[in-house]
Image 1 (cartoon, each protein chain N blue to C red):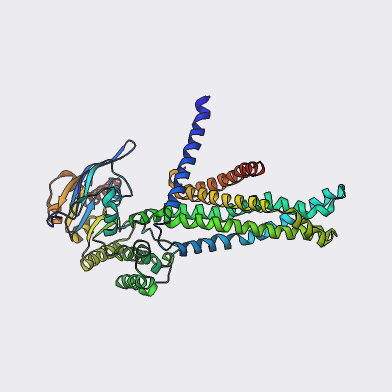
Image 2 (tube, chains in turn orange, blue):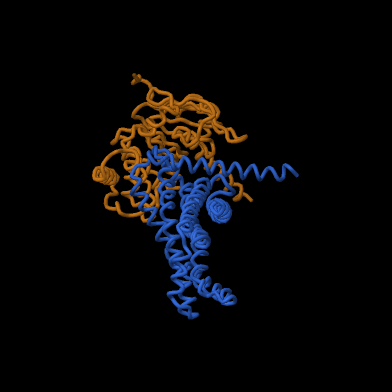
Length: 261
Length: 259
């Protein structure tokens, strides 16, 4: 029996190092059921490695991951993979497959559904993401935003309980960033999956998330509600939070200096 | 001195072991791979169509040259009537399997290594693993099985076209009676020659496609990153496959000749 009050996902003291580079040094995180949790952090602080440890792409050196009340190990990994989807920063779409074939791939390879059922469910997922008109196009024929939606369609077609988003807004302009976060929030509410989003976009994270965590030096320095994050007096949290203001001050100081000279 | 010689040897041995494990894992994934027949048909079509033109072109020219050279040499000894035997045995026992395999490595093998390398680079392989799909089963198994079918077929085609090339140069161009040429072919080729031909073709197919898939699959562990890693993996795949084909040809020939 699993305790329903226990978070869907619990990460306890995760460690990971690559040669001499310590990436995770005891990172812990609770992800409650049905919530959208955003993990913030500067570039290179190990956010993506944390997600990859969850997805099983990278093996942690030490620590514990619990999913739905069970420790994640070799015996429970297959069940976890059935119930979890991963949205890569690069989308990881198969460029030799059409949009429909990309979405159908997880159903084809992990279920015993008939071809007709797979087609119906894949077209339904594409329709929900407003891509049904483009089902016969290849990823390279779609815009960046459409590719992101296609990757999300592939992630949700298996009706996962947990979706992991790795830097979904990286490299996008502010308008597209907003659109992607709105899309994540919209479909997370619609399909009622639990979401873990890794990003360094503070504003969007604070608006869209139920909980926010800050990863720094391999550890979670903050974990809580977005309102608590905005009022935190922790020096690392405040320096991350106020980085835009700090940039504005630096630019203003530079302009003053150059005007004076 | 010992360390200088030993280190690359140990590295080579380790690489061979890893490739063997990779190939075994790919075959072991057969029962777990869903919709395998469909992917197998696609792999057969890709390998077959990709290589057909080059097999036809190289096959006809190999036969033409063999016919010309053979006629020139045999003419010295007044044995032109044996041209069919020379061309057919050269093609069936040696040139057919080896040259067809080298052409297939150049065409299908290099494309396969680059394709899988790019899929590794763009996280498509990682995506398969997060979906719970066996990446070896999905990407490699159908290609390996297809190679066991396509390589012998392409080799047979290469030999047939080569025989026709030998006929063109020996009979149509140099005046040898067609009946003499074809009857020498018929008398010379025995069942064990064909066995050697197909054993070589199947082995070369398996080993080269395994090598090319392996190099692409682990492109990220080699030298460089990104596009450079893919290009390095493709080069390694082609060079090592060609070396393996020639080395295995020697081993198989020695083994089958002295049975």
